[in-house]
Length: 394
Figure 1 (cartoon, rainbow, N blue to C red):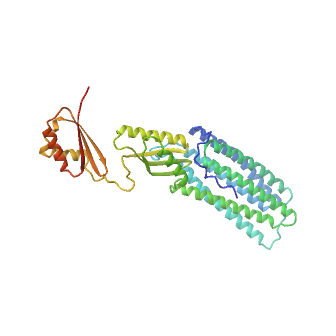
Figure 2 (figure 1 turned 90 degrees about the vertical axis):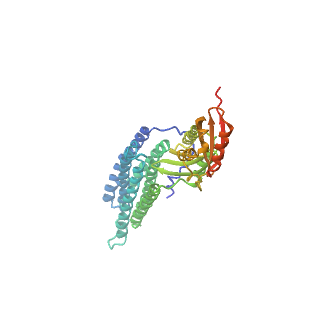
Figure 3 (figure 1 turned 180 degrees about the horizontal axis):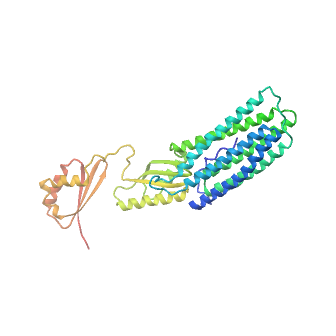
């Protein structure tokens, strides 16, 4: 059918990636969908009534195809209204998945319509009654449907691209596939006029097969989102490389992505220099978040975990004592007692499964007390190194 590549939009920084507000997205979706709904209502009534009057089964099938679109339009409207609600206590990640679930339900409904039409046309083709030839006026109904649906496709696609809505894009392809099915119907009716009456039910069956294919696509894509399928490997690689080149980031690992109703959610572990302050590490993660969302507008939310070392394969520090436990252990040793009153600050660095201790002393302490403290530390296996500084405040 040529049409269904509507989810392979790459995360590119398009020149027109102006950030579209939620309200604007919602009103654009509503406007496009309403226009589609009105036009589809008129077309489906015309096709079904026309099909009965002119005895064209293909035209009736196409009318139901259009009607299924109409139902889909209302599902889309209903779902996008719910999906655009703000996050709340029960749905802290927002309501984007409602749109996805609605698409699955819609796909199942379409599949049902397709099967019903196919069975009916099949039965008619192999019945003993002579096949009726549709009246020539049926051609006019089919031609009108083609023009209307192709116009809807262009109108919907333009808006979908502007507001980055996969759902509207899917809807646009929906209109395009409708136009194609109407072309098949036109050919079937025309063929019947030239003495091949079986072409009309054949056209009805082709339309049914197309509806079924489309339903399958909708179900497949949306279920893959519901089970948290990540982005394509090349897209993930592009995001990975972009983060890795940001200043302060030494390494990126455990980068994970998933989709949620037209947005992308990502989380990553960033390795930074283990000796920098907590606030600098936080500053680096903020930079990454800001620049990532600017470069890839589809990314809505990024969760970043800062690491002083690569913890992808192992967690060497997880069994080490906490600050409170380590200081209690040291204070319990009599040989450290002389130095405690002079200690202004203790910094711990957890790295490579060991702790590096940095002490800052208030004033110059006796070399004996310092030596005794060092000796005590050397007996504690988890301490790799101890550095002692004296505070000079100018």
